[in-house]
Length: 247
Image (cartoon, rainbow, N blue to C red; front, side, top):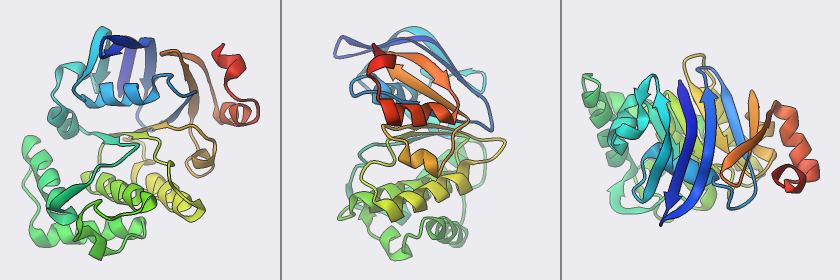
């Protein structure tokens, strides 16, 4: 589904990714861990198409198409979802309005009919229920006045409604208490653990992986993947840290 080969990228002319390669197949959940400054968020932004992140070498394909040649909205319509480490607030725009417009724009790009208001609200209630998010919150401006945990749960509701093929989740566990962590983990499993979907989890800690068990764990250090393994690798990192692996 996603194939990255020898990816190099810079931010403000500073090299961040330095030859990163990774392949993710449908039905797989991959976790990327690593120290601060390793390039984890840069990888997510490059794949999402954020301006200011320049690819200088290498390639990334998504379902066989050149991902790096697509605009961000084209990547989204193709089935890529990026969950932000710090979800943004959008004053004056309700969640319901934002999500319905987003979903129908993607459906239009795929040649599908738009959802009616009634069908959309039914879908929104279903996905909000998975994340235990009150529907009244979906009527509020996007993330305005939300706690950190509410923002992350709201973002997972967005993911459920948009129903992507590949979810790239950048430190979704950041700012979550114990209960919210379990709710978000259960939501990721319910929405994305399917044979036709895949997930790339970017995290510092093992704790999210207790709820969303990955098939593969990778250590990203100094702009490239330096070690890969199964779920046991995350436990090793939790015990011993990154110093020896990232040296």
